[in-house]
Length: 244
Length: 314
Image (tube, rainbow over all chains, first blue to last red; front, side):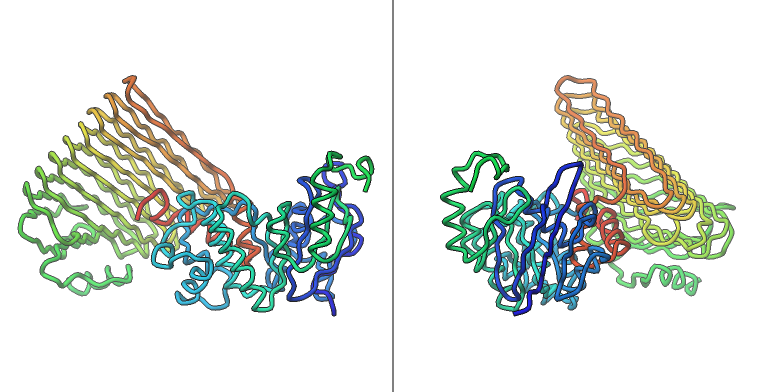
C-alpha cells in the first residue's frame, strides 16, 4: 500500500533546540493513526510541519503527500491537497457565524451541508448556525464546530491535536463519532495525544519521545509500551537518560 | 421627485416602503422628497439653502410597530447636505429607526448631521445608520449628536460603513444617562485608500444603576488612518460601563485607540479593552488550513469583526 504521508529523515531545530530528530514514518490511507508521547515530545510540532504552518517549514528532510514533496507549499496549498488540522485549542472568531465557518472550506455552500455537518457532531443547527464562533461557545462546542467545518471540506488527511483536551465525556464521544465518519468517507486520521483513551481509537500508533519515534506498531502494543514504560518514566523527555 | 427617491433606494439595493404602516422620510440634498407618518409620530421638516431642519416627536406612550425608514443622500458628485435634527421621544414611547445615507458618486460632498436627542422616562430608541459610499472617497461625513436619557430610558445606536470608501468621517457623540438608563453606542467602519476615520464618543453615567457600552470595530488598509477616543464616566452608585475598541490594520494603515474611563463613585465600575493589530495568526492559520487563501481568510476575519453580531449585538 502506498502511504498518503511519508515523512523522511525529518529534523527541525527551533530556537537552538532540536525539536524533531531524524523522524521517519508513513501514514496509510483510510486508517486512523496516533502519535502518542509525553508533553514536549514534539507531537504537535510534527503536525505543524505536515500542515506547513509558519515557523515550521524550515525543516530538513522531506514530507511527501501522495508521493509529492510539499516543501514549497503554504498552508492553504496543502489544504487544497486535502490536508487539514483540528487544533488543541480552536480559534475564536468574533462576529463570524457558525454557518460561515462551517462552510468556509466546503465545495458546497448551502445550508443543508452546514446543518448535516453540525448534526454529525451532535449540535443542533437551529441553535448554532447563526451563533458566532466566539467566546460565548465552550471549548468543547468550538472543537465540535471546527470538526463540522472539517467534515464539509471532505479532506484526505485530518490531524487532530489532543482531541480530548478541555472537553467533557459527551463532547469527546461526538468527536470520536465524527472521526469515524471521516474515516468512513475515506479520510486518513492522525491523532496527536498523550491520552490512552484517544490512543485506543487508532489502528496503528507511533510512540514519540524527544523528537524521535521510539516504537511503532499496532495500537495495543504501543499502548502496553506507553503504559508500562512511558507513563512511569521520569526522564523528562531525555530518553537516553531514562533508558528504554 | 419619485424617480429620485427610487434612484436613492436603488443605490442601497432597496425600494421605498409602500406599506402605509411604515413611516418613512427621504431627503436628497436640501429637498424633502418623501414624508409618510404614522399615528403618534410627528415630523416637521424645513428646507434650507444647504440642508434640512427636522423636528421629530414621538408622543408619550406610543410604541411604533415598524421601524421608521429614513433615507438621506446626495447623488451628484459635488454638494453639501447639512441636516439638523431634534428628536424627542415621550415617556414610555418606543421607536426604531433604520437610516440609510447614500453618496455613491461623491467626489466632493459634505454631509453633516447635528442631532439633539432626548428620551423621556422609560422611552426606547434604536437607531441604525448605514452608509453607502462610492469608490472615490470624496465624501466628508460629520455626525454630531447630543443624547439625554431620562430615568429608565434605553438608547442604542449603530453606525455602519462597510461599502465603498469611508472618505473622511468624524463622529462626535455625547450622551448623558440618568438612573437605570441603558446606552449602547456602536460603530463599525472599514477604511481604505487615504480614508480618515475619527470617532469621539463620550458617555456620562449620571444616575444610579445607569449602564453604558461604547463599542468600536474598525478595519483600515492601504494608507487609511483611524483614531478612536471613547470616554466613559461613571458618577453614581452601581453605574456600570464598558469601552471596547478593536482595530485591524493591513498594509500601511494606521490606528490609534484611547479609551478613557473615569469613575467618581466607589460603587461604580467601568472597564475598557482595546486591541489594535494585524489579523490574529491563529485565526488566519485555521482558515488557511481549511483552504482559504491568506487574503480571503483575512477578509473573512474582518467581515466577522465588522458584523453586527460582534459585541453581542444581533
